[in-house]
Image 1 (tube, rainbow over the protein chains, first blue to last red):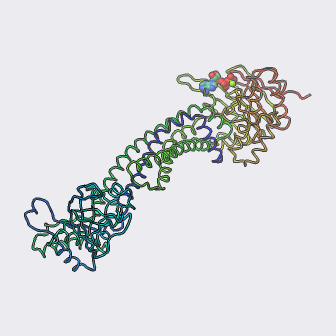
Image 2: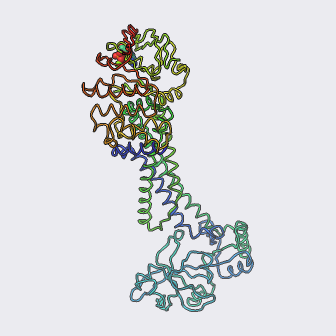
Image 3: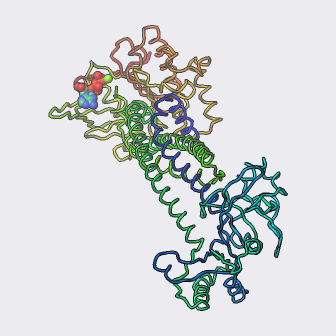
Length: 395
Length: 229
Ligand SMILES: Nc1ncnc2c1ncn2[C@@H]1O[C@H](COP(=O)(O)OP(=O)(O)O)[C@@H](O)[C@H]1O
Ligand SMILES: [Mg+2]
């Protein structure tokens, strides 16, 4: 018998029992929905949180003093001299940026706010990838102007919009700074204060008479991934030797390490939801098998009639298997829509950008096909084996 | 060679402790073109015999030759093919599929033989017309009278142009007027060459048939061919 006819028959059968069909499918809908939602949310999250880093995440690390108790006793500090040393020595292998952290009262228009200030080297935006310039541009190499980068929230809060903030001045410690650009942060790593300004490091040194040119953190972007680990240890050694301190005085942190952590969190999250989805699918599959067994029993006489007029066991098997597959595929389809909706809602609420990841449909189709075959085979086999005489006589 | 040859056919039903000998050594030969009535009181084994003839059930012992084939040695699929292509069934309670309309019911045997849609449609239409169901193609069985339902069943039985029609009390659920209608149809079919075996306990119906076999307690007690006038 042609598949098409069996298919149409199956659809009619399901239509005749709409409510039952739907109730049977709830487990599968929830199961597939969760799988689709978690995959889409996971993918969106991954893209959103680490997407921008991914390209050079394996080449970036931070270097700073180890502030744990033990190392504190060793009096050491980082300064511009160290930056120069590293730049000189590793010129062909890495780009070196640095930042110095401060906190000041800043006057925006009329209001005053205590704000974190990060004074950074001119190559900072290329190296750390921490900043996304939304409006304006990063300051020019070697600038001696009082320029400042402010974040989107501040710009919108005090100037109405990011665009309007450009060119205005803010007073930092009674000194005017011109807003050069508005940035958005990839601040999943530095989940520090939202109010953060970036200023040129050399300008900051000059204004505040920081003659020993201190630095809090060094950001290093290696030019290739190959010698990353080697450079990471070598640079620490170079600094330690030049200062005559132990290597343990310094700590390095690779962005890749942190990305691993994010990935791990996502993985755990995925595993938890997946087990929920798995249970729903199992329950859904059992429900489908149950309803198919009921259906076989209800239609015993139909099976008898079909056999009497020449249906072979495989025709009956095919009919019930296809019916089960139509049922589970329908559940999978509704589940997909459900999961898609859920993912869109969650990403919206979490203010993430939604990434559509089409393989989820393929995955859920595979899942429902497997469930359909697993839960449909036994009832279908049972139907196929029915004795025609016994089934014809069945009341 | 005869269309049907039964040799010492027995059928024993075992239900728990009880054993029922529904057929006790039945010998029977039926030639092509015959119109045979199998009669007997209720429980005499008529349906059992018909089901064996229709390859729906297997005898406990004995030989069954259908169209020169030894039915005992056929497997499930071969039996299905025989039912599908050589045989047509008509039942007392019609046995139509309630969710399919007249058209689809008539088509059903053709589906299992992978006949093309065009051909199916053509044959179903011709059969429906022959059974006076032209205006009823889209009706569901529940929308039809008993006589109409039985005519649909006959059309379905004829779909694959069977050699042999097996009817188990086809008029058992019908009034006398409809009974005559159905019997007229069967007679006409027989005249066009279809071999028919009709199980009934209504004496009037033997007016239509050419041969009468009477069963009693699983034994053939009378086998009488009519002298053609
Ligand atoms: N499936 C069955 N299981 C047990 N006994 C049966 C079964 N089918 C028929 N019988 C018995 O076999 C005998 C013949 O039955 P059947 O062929 O249906 O008679 P008829 O059709 O002439 O009324 C009866 O005694 C009946 O009770
Ligand atoms: Mg009977």
